[in-house]
Length: 476
Ligand code: HAM
Image (cartoon, rainbow, N blue to C red; front, side, top):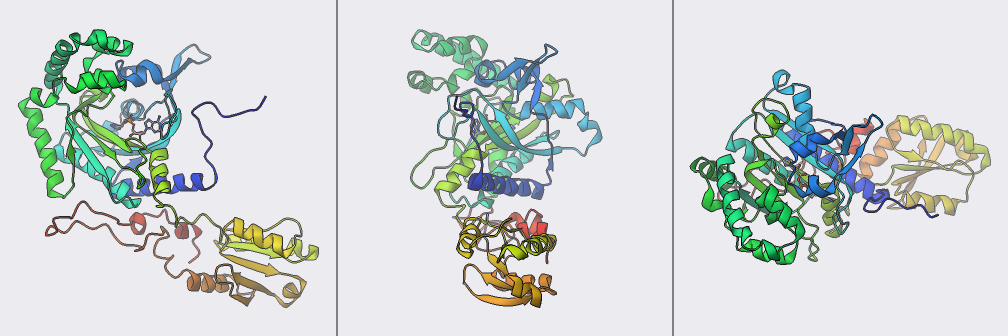
């Protein structure tokens, strides 16, 4: 039997793994700029967390969960999304009583949905997201949206489309559900089996149906904006006005209701297409939630959040060449010339690593040509070449593999010699290491005089957050 990965689950390695780690690091750094702290909830939760939290009428709970009984015969589920699990963690740990409010939490990790695999849609995928819990304010909602956009700008996206809507408060949705029930009751015979069930459970979920014929029918359905309570309308316009003040462009989309049951008030999605038109679906989706904390046994606190699919973000960046400058190579390939120097070179390579330079060396004697090929394949910046002659003299040949410049350096001053060579070859790397054109450029507010100006764009979080490769090395 040939072993393959489970359908819809993919192996991430090589450049994709490096790219995804880079995407995650920039998003985490952005969240930290906005004072969010990390939370790492378990992958597995008791099933009720999602059935009650994410919602019985959502497609996720009805059809897409990986649910099974553990050995103690309790029903558990691999998280299909983070929000319900994060709120469960907030409640279980009484974080609302012990931590600074509002709670500002970010997370990053795998989620699981039994969906039909296709471009940008997997059964195991990775989400980065945030939840801000405990403060009911349009400003909090706006901050969350702005942060989502900012994270994507930090990654180099230039053109994003923010779609926004409100699904109002409970009073609004109760009236709206009644209106939808009446409307869809007249069409239900032409609609799919799922929609029959949705009509019973929650007619709003019919609006998420992917069947083309049903979508056509849904186009003629009543719109939530005609049912908004005064309070919800006011709140929505407050959020929009904050976005306007910050120059954030958005598109009002009254068909956007999002597929999860916990939402109330503002909901949003961020979309982008690759330059060649490839659509990976929404990069990011989120919104405000009113009753979720209480539903999961906590106090009556509201929250707002979003999540992004890392595979989708990565896929688009790859397509548009936004990762072309990502440095996935090592600093040095250390080359032993001849069998006799293998041990010394092995020890020296370890020293090089202690100095903070990433390095590799062959563990057996190889031909020079083979070693240069290996160095190239690993993206090494320099080769450090040592034979018996060099070792006897206490020197090594240092070759810049890009410029092909070569010089002899003293092993006694190895650290200084390497610092000098790297500073000369990569003079900007100290600033951050993110590879953006303007290293260390701080986020900027848009120019209020500039009608084209949007939200802070193309900044670089690196100078404010210590995820830079250079920092890790601690070499300079
Ligand atoms: P969601 O819209 O279900 O929202 O998922 C958020 C993002 O995860 C999507 O926009 C998409 O990029 C990605 N995603 C979803 N399903 C898949 C899949 N099968 N394969 C690849 N990527 C996928 C939530 O999960 C909410 N918890 C967001 C939220 C947080 N709302 C409030 N707080």
